[in-house]
Amino acid sequence: MTRTRTLLAGAVALAIVAGTAETVVAQGACEQLWVERNSIFKARGYCFKTRRAISYFGNAGCVYDNENAVPLSPGERARVAQIRAMERQYGCR
Image: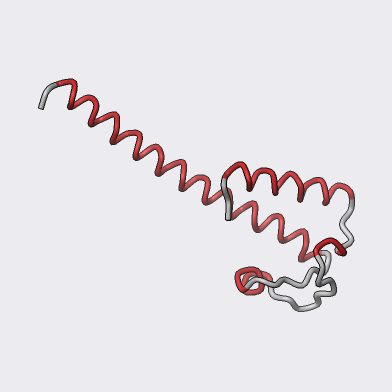
């Protein structure tokens, strides 16, 4: 293998590792954002619909089936909007 090919192979390997690390970081950030966003709704009485959210937060004491009906403060609404924007930026699912 020539020196150029060796350097190129090394660069590709580093890019793959960096890409993997970015993916892991994004996944961790996505999890944290999901928990923070849904914690806000849980604290205000939202009744979760997904298995994941029900498993994590439960629905004990929930009152609101419609997310838009949950009485959030302006600060909470702003934070939820900010979190959603970050989730879109990271490509969270």
